[in-house]
Image (cartoon, rainbow, N blue to C red; front, side):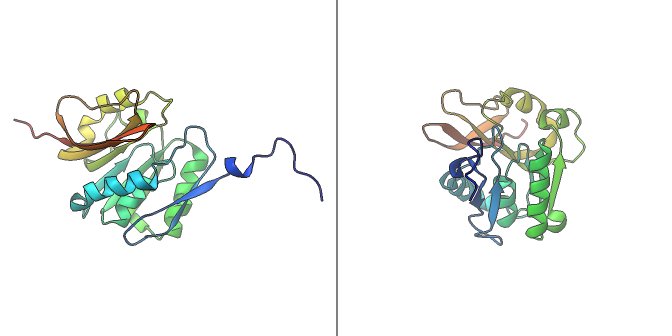
Length: 198
């Protein structure tokens, strides 16, 4: 038997998976690649978030801007959202998302778009969304730019989930009201509602 190369990734660094927690795809595994910046929202945080969101999910249009494993956008679809646009810049992750959507038989409900989320937001081409997930890599510093460009993409009373470092939490500012939040040592999980225009 040939010993493994010392540069081969260890089991702990290899690809893993997360599970869809509830709904029609409950228990389905979503692959998580060993990619820089990829940090899926924990099961516990997702369960809390989707308990908050459950009343607004049926029929919702969802935008998952930094989709990664698809854990947020696909969980929303599993629980009754009408459609989800999953935006991912990395070609390998985007292909993995397409493969996952095909395996789940998501059909037209899930669209995977390989694109840079911040560039995409410069030109609204996909209509307005009822729910947006904003969970970029923590070292990207992408929150402010995304929030500045998000306005034309969201419905008048849309919901916005932001995951950001606990030490430097991100917030959307005027026009949004904090609905619920929780935090861990590493991350702040915050759900906002767009305030209707006066």
